[in-house]
Structure formats: C-alpha cells, structure tokens
Amino acid sequence: MLPDYGWLAWTLIIASTYLTGISKGGFAGGFGTLSVPLMALAIGPIEAAGLLLPLLLVMDVFAVKAWWGHHVATEIRRLLPGMALGVIAGTLLIGTLDESHVWLLLGVVSLLFVAYMIIKPAASRPIHALWAWPASIGVGVTSFLAHAGAPPMNLYLLPRRLSKQAFIATCTLAFAAVNLMKLPPYLWLGEINLTSIWASLALALVPVAWLGVRSGLWLQSRVNERLFYRLVILAMAIVGVQLIVKAL
Image 1 (cartoon, rainbow, N blue to C red):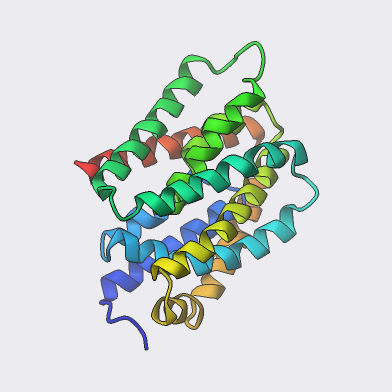
Image 2: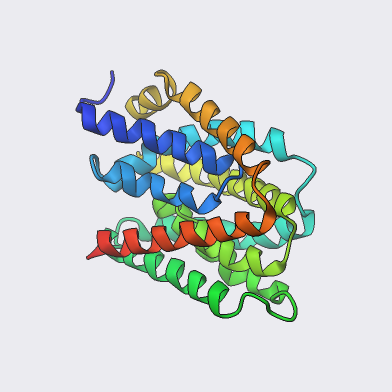
C-alpha cells in the first residue's frame, strides 16, 4: 500500500529523487544533501530518510558502474573504518538526538567547509591523510541520520587535491559503501518497511533516479574542473544556510 501523501509531498519526493540522481552522477555533489531537507518540507525527516535509502542504493548501482576504475583505492580504505564507526554511532544516537540539533550541526559544518575553501583555496600541500578519521566518522553519522554526508566528505577530499574524475569516483564508491552499511540498522529500526520500499521502488521513482544519474554524468562532463569545484562550494553554502534555517 502506498503512503497517503498529497500532491505537494509527491512533487517534492520526485524532485528530491532527481536532484539526488544528478548528484550521484557527479555534478555538484553537495546538492544531494538537499534531498532529505526538501522531502522533510512535506513529510518527517526520519520518514524521508527511510524512503530515500532504497532509491540511493539503486542510484549507487548506476553511479558505481559509471565511475568504477577512476576512484582512489587508498582513500576508500582510509574512509571505510571511520564510516562504519559513524554508522554505529548514528544507530545509537538516533533515538536520543533532537533533529533540529542535527540540522544545525550539518549547517555549521557546511559553512565551515565553504569558509575554509574561500580563505585557504591554494594551500601549499594537501591536508594530511589522518584527517580521514574524523571526516569519515562524520560522514557515517550524518549520512545515517539524514543522508547528508557530503559536508564532512568534501571537507576531507577536496583539500586532498584529487582530479575531478578521481574526486567524483571516490565519493561515489564511499557513499555506496556507507549506504550499504546503513541498510541493516535501518531495517532493524523500522525506518525501512514494505510501505517505504513500495513507494521508493514500485513507482516511477527508479526511472527518475536513473534519469537524474544520467543528467549528472552529462553535466559534469561538460563543466571544467575549476568551475566544477566552485559549484560544489556554492552547493555547500546553499546547503549550510538551508540546514541552519531548518534548525532554527
């Protein structure tokens, strides 16, 4: 049975799905962080997160297939343990943490990222690989709570000075991994159920997801590297302001 949403809710859900697909395709990845807040304008954020995860897993299949081989394997290995710890922490916190505090934290992290990239855009050398630990734990927690792991991921990976392709591919594989980690606790907590699976996968949302990924692939291949990173920074600024407004 489908959830009893109104036309506005379904419009926002479809828009969020397409927006997330574009992000998964590699175009201005920070925009994907807007998906849960956008859905949450019409339905609860926890419900939105449960509705979106099955679609994210489908998008991950499309995106990983498109970007496989371009990722930096050493960066993936650095990120995996911390992301697993973050998912465990998110599972333990979800019943006790106020949602407005989550939005506020994500918004502040996003704007700190923007400030760092504006003030120190030409660092003499990439940041140290040890920063992968706090960043990846942050990815695990924020991704678990609201599918919003882009701010801490970008805060670590962008200053690592990867090429555009390597950056997109590494983000794609890392987020595919963390989404798989989230699936068992989401099922255990009841955030994913037959209703949310039916709403996510049995409607026209999978074609929307596929179209979004293809659109992202088309857009990123036609945008130069400098402009691409500026778009990511702009996306993070938009995300940060939107999340702080949501929290307040």
